[in-house]
Amino acid sequence: MLAFLSRATARLTDFIEDAEFLDALSGPLATGASKLLPRGPVNDLLSGTAGGHPLHPALVLAPLGCWLSATTLDALGGPGSRNAARRLLGVGSVAALPAALAGVNDWMDTTGPEQRVGLVHALVNASGLSLFTASWWVRGQGHHGVGVALSSGAMALAAAGGWLGGHLAYARGVGVDTTVFQSAVQDWTDVGTDDQVREGTPILVRAHGTPVMLVRDGSTIMALADRCTHRGAPLHEGTIDDGCVTCPWHGSKFRLADGAITHGPATRPQPRFDVRVMNGRVQVRQAGVLTSLRTNPVS
Image 1 (cartoon, rainbow, N blue to C red):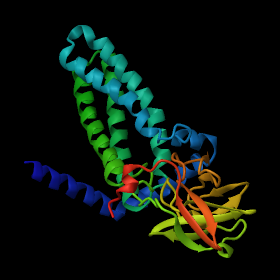
Image 2: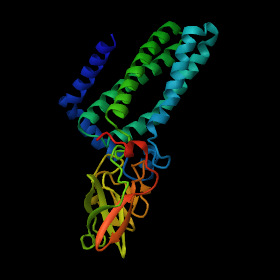
Image 3: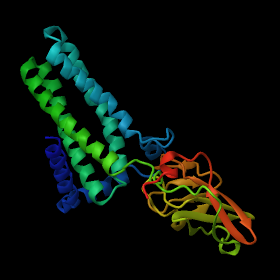
Image 4: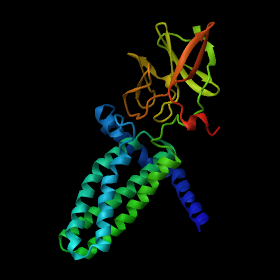
């Protein structure tokens, strides 16, 4: 039974990821969303940049909690709990709006299979929200039985939408620090000559296969992980300005000195490398605390 379910869910997600016909809808919607939510303070807020984690997964707890509580009251609460269940449905529907906005904010930076799954995830959740709102309405008109039927169907859609959201995060890594599985450079490693690194012009080097961006600021050479933590863009193709590097794909800005984020949509800082020059050769090693995933990578 377990193997059957596993194969069935894999076939479903594979079908959605391969459904190129969805691009006709997802592409224009993502473009429109990027115009509605341009880079800036609102985009940073919805991304969760200040908190260090994507905001969308946290915001969905409020509507899901309200809707699940209302469903529980419908099943176990009896007639005396009907008003409370209806209020919970209303609060959940209102709370779903900022959660959805944060989700759109994250989704517009995806492409290909991830964008297709995200589109279906959004459509399923929007359908569930519509049914929950309709349930709240008809209950107010005295049609409790119809309201329970609508919210039961909505709960099933919310569960399906949540499962697709989990697939995006846990199977496709959307919202995950894209550098977390890169092998850590634990020892001083030679990556090139001192004269290769020029003022204000980032270059790409590799330390035991790990891509590293080097850039000179006066007499100091600074090094960050080249792969952007947000969606994996090559930072050495970005621009250097005011002590920061700007991601060439989505505009996240990281301080060269320590990898800290000065502007989203990234939520995780760039891993930093210590740098030294020995006999005209540049050597780097990972700075800070080394996590177990980096010191024992899949590779």
